[in-house]
Amino acid sequence: MLAVRPYVAADAANWDALVARSRNGNLLHRRGYMDYHADRFIDASLVVEKAGEMVGVFPASAHDDGIVSHGGLTYAGLISTAALRAEAMLDAFAAIGAHHRGRGVSRILYKAVPRVFQSGHADEDLYALHRLGARLVRRDLSSAIALREPFAFSQGRRHDIGKARKAGIDVTPGDDLEGFHALLTDALRRHDASPTHRLDELQRLRSRFPEAIALHEARRDGELLAGVLVYDFGRVVHTQYMAASEQGRALGALSLTLEHLIRDTYADRQHFSFGISTEQGGQVLNAGLVAQKESFGARAVVHDFYEWTP
Image (cartoon, rainbow, N blue to C red; front, side, top):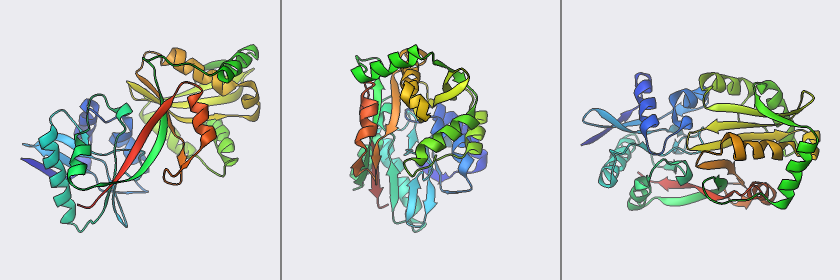
């Protein structure tokens, strides 16, 4: 029999160990990452156990209108090991539903882990949601390059890369998070937006996960022209943030940086992820943004949200 109980701080080490051996978990689901913004969310995470052994974890937060998996993460869902096969997954969801019904929860928003981030087939949760009558309520469009399959840069992208090389721009790993965050903030301000993470939060996360969070900088004569902050998930790398100065955009500095990462630094990985290009709950496609990613050879990956009444 499976049992479900609330996560407690003493579970942190076992939680992280499960994420490390899971089929669909990564850096985002480690407690050191989730808890960096613990002051903003009421944690409602659950642990799934079989005969006292942890076989799944459910990152989640409590909100006025129910439970979200997780309010501070792009995606989460039930992070599972191979021990949760199809029938056991049905039991796990039944136990999660019973747990929340007993606490008066009427709505769970389930952010499924996109397949590109899975290390093995792990769609048992989607089948369980179907059986429980969950509804697909949102679909964001992301983009990723399948690095082991044929892909090509567009002519315009190749032109920008050549221009950046001629300008003498160098791309190297860097540590100037403060300079990069300022560049990013300025770039997003033009779109009436701001970075999800404050500078101090990025610094804290990078200090916790130096092996998984890397900054790559494009400079000329020491001046920072562009940067890409990468989350390294192992099989998959993800561009958490990208930014270029006005001069960097004119010289193609960001294109050169991405070319270096795709063709060299992370060429041995399975996928190179760029993130979503949709707005307003997935209803609006930012055509310019998705075209930029497609010009590097990336194609669509969806992020699905399900509403479940437990």
